Length: 265
Picture (cartoon, rainbow, N blue to C red):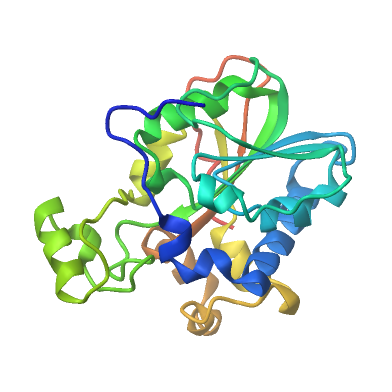
């Protein structure tokens, strides 16, 4: 069994947060990820090896499996993994893993799914380094995650919670009967660009707002944006509540993101 880093992993998240148990909501997210991979991976998906890091109960992982070759869903949260789909598909596996020390060889993975995970781990830099290590050159990451700049905290839906010092944030949660301490650590658009700076970043956040198919269900928080001019929307991307990016691991040494790589939408 993996040993957590000194900060420790978040415990009981699956049991305490209804969103990760929402079957239809998770399936919609899987359809979104599948659509993005089909359009932006740049290689055949049906033979690709995929790691879904922080897979929780594996609903999204299982939905993506028919699109891909071999798929591993990993999470540190054993209570969540106990609900993972079990079956005869030898190409779909689930395991408890420590995202700070992935039990996978260098360059062994074609695709990594890192959806709503970075804020839940002990060390986001270590997570990013491990994902970079296990991904082959030319491989891709589907990344999504919350924006620290957005004023409504996305896990508890309490305004400004994530802007407060840890002690005050814990008191805020206790006041509303939502928990004893606040664990999540989100980052801004600029902070996330720095976190993933070893990759070539393709920001799809605006594209998914403007062109998301009906069956993927537009986030109600963003529906009003479709009425705004696109040039104005581009300036608003760093303020959106959540980001969706494709990260490409370069096939040659990469010195940082150029302007063409991370233009929104």
